[in-house]
Amino acid sequence: MFSFLVIVMQLNILYAPLKEIPRSQILIFAGDDCYPCKKLLDYLFRAGVLFSNHIKVIWIRNEDAAIEWALQNGINEIPLVMINNQIVEGSEHEVAKRVVKYMLENNIITQEELYKNLRKVVWLNAKYLGEKIGLEIIVNEKMIPALINRVKKFYMPYCPCRLELKEENICPCDHSLEELKENGYCKCRLFLVKK
Image (cartoon, rainbow, N blue to C red):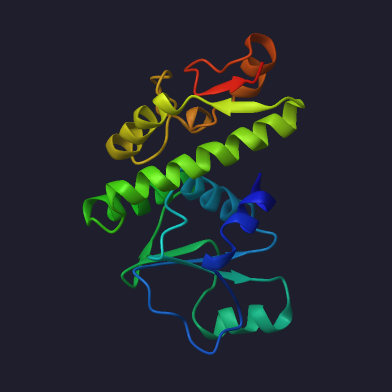
């Protein structure tokens, strides 16, 4: 899903080396061959916050000039997340939650933006799931508010019907592909196979 994600959020990506690091409340330094970077961005994408103008992703390609630039600017490892110039440490899942929590608690992303962004993500995920199983997937729009409530309460879009707050239950959850193939819908019926 990640290559699809990069295309979608292209406007938020700046490629190193840069003349200067942009001013932004949230900066994320990520790179080409970095699996944790991709996971972190995927979590933030699924939470609907990567579309925000308040997040800037600085992409460090696996090239000498970009790596040299990163080291000169004190970026010794990636992913590196900075909120208001403070480094956020932890696993990519926990860091993503802290970014979302910060954005919600400080009203950086409005409820309207969150709804619009999460709706966009849900429809992109429907397309992704449909490509995976070779069927057209549609979205039950009535379930989007339930997903938004999970983001507001737990800072990640955990499936509304799965009570455990674990990574495999972040929407679209790990079970959704199998459920769509077998039943024609996922457990919470957010995604449905078009008849």
